[in-house]
Image (cartoon, rainbow, N blue to C red; front, side, top):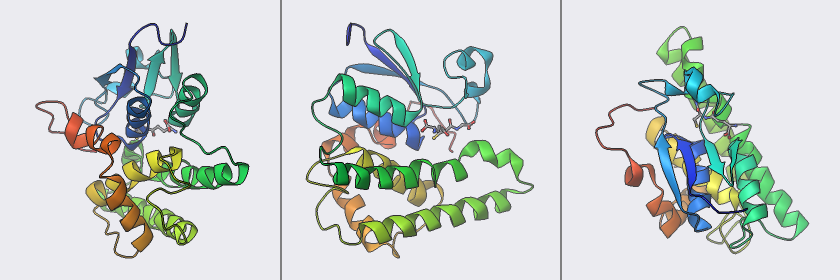
Length: 218
Ligand SMILES: N[C@@H](CCC(=O)N[C@@H](CS)C(=O)NCC(=O)O)C(=O)O
């Protein structure tokens, strides 16, 4: 039965994909505990034990309703389908497609190309940095172009949607980890500033949930 036991989020405090899910759980008032999987220092995602939770050996994974779910967007959709209020997607088909455009650019077009798991496949750290920054900037430019006419506080429509749940963690990652500036992206910059003031992003922010004594970074 839906919601019988406390959900467990396997995540990493600095992971953008984990933040998407953490924010959705928070918005939908789902009680959960977060298990920190250190994907940087300990590389706990690569253990056989964690592989039984997520065969892709990545975070996030969510144990909920007696099931284990992986892939952040599949998890968001499950939460939306099983706990429809508050809604994370517009009803209108065009608005929904607009929301998915934003999500896909981030989920498929940016995050996989800056994932920490790629690092060891580059000869030097500098090559990895240049690669990740290039693809992140390209994705941010696409987002800026698509959102240029957006004047409200959210990416799409008049409430937080999955697009915002993807955008805020991505922009935090871009500015904090990749040390990119948002100066070239006025719309993204404005949305980021506005969205960070929302309670959901304050309480689920990596700085708010950072485990004690953690020193590792992405
Ligand atoms: N498409 C997956 C991507 C998951 C992913 O790449 N997670 C990153 C952190 S944001 C990770 O676990 N990286 C560690 C690794 O690849 O070893 C999702 O949306 O859940």
